Structures are given as C-alpha cells and as structure tokens.
Image 1 (tube, helix red, strand yellow):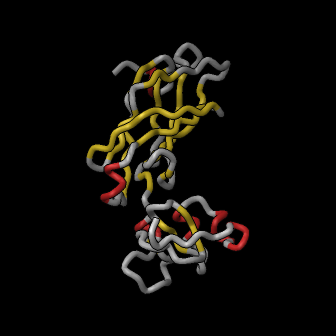
Image 2: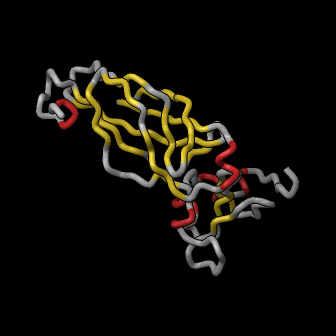
Length: 174
C-alpha cells in the first residue's frame, strides 16, 4: 500500500504484541488499525492508536477494536446455535471486509463465517458438542475481520453435558 514502511520484524520490538491493548501499554509502540499490527515505526496512511500518555485524538485502550462482552455463554451439548458477539470500536472500512468467528473449544479450533450487523457479529450456526468425559468444557470465540485480523478479547463459552451435570444453566428447562 502507498505510504507503508516495510520493516524487518527483528528491528521492531513492538511487532511481538498481537493485541492493540497490549501494544499501547508500551510507550514506544503504536497500533496500526488497518494492518492490525503493533509497531515502533510509522503506520503510513492507517488509523493509529497511541499509548494513553500521548496527546493525540486516538490515544488509549478505549479506541482499540475489541469484544465488548465478558459474561460466558453456556450451551447444552448437541445444541445448534448462532452466537452473537458484541464488539466495539468498529472502523467503517472494517464493515466491508469478510467476517469470521474463530471458535476454540477444549483445544479444538474451527473457523466459521460470520456477518456484522450493527455492533454485533453473528457467527454462522454451528453444533456445539461436548463428547469428552467432563461435564463441562470451556472455550472462547474470537472475532476476525478481513479474513484473519482479530479484535482484542474473546467471548467465553461453556458446553455442558446434561447427563453429567443436570444443574448446568443450559440444561434447566426454560
């Protein structure tokens, strides 16, 4: 892209940070939103998020694109669900890129298509199975835009086997 500066990652200690919030805790680092990258160098013609002690319009973690939910979603094993993940700091150009949900469940990862509607990303319907010998398995859902760029944070999920834990919130009759 025009204005980009190509930098050897060995010369840029900031490149090790993969989340906006972590990146901007370092005084010499900035977050390039479009590139979804932490750098010590200029971001070119990109939106830039600076550490909070920098006098700039977009400085501080509140400007980082991130998942805006932290309460775990509990699902009954075998249920087919469309997960809705609330996000914040959605920049206009993000809306016109492909969206996906990365689901990590008990160490198994899969990616499903998603759509953005307002401030929520809706993950394509998927079946959630707990075929382990544990009553509950846990995981999380990350939001991806432009194929592989992740929003900070994730939505925690729990999958219950009702035959092993009938008291699980998802197993109780509604």
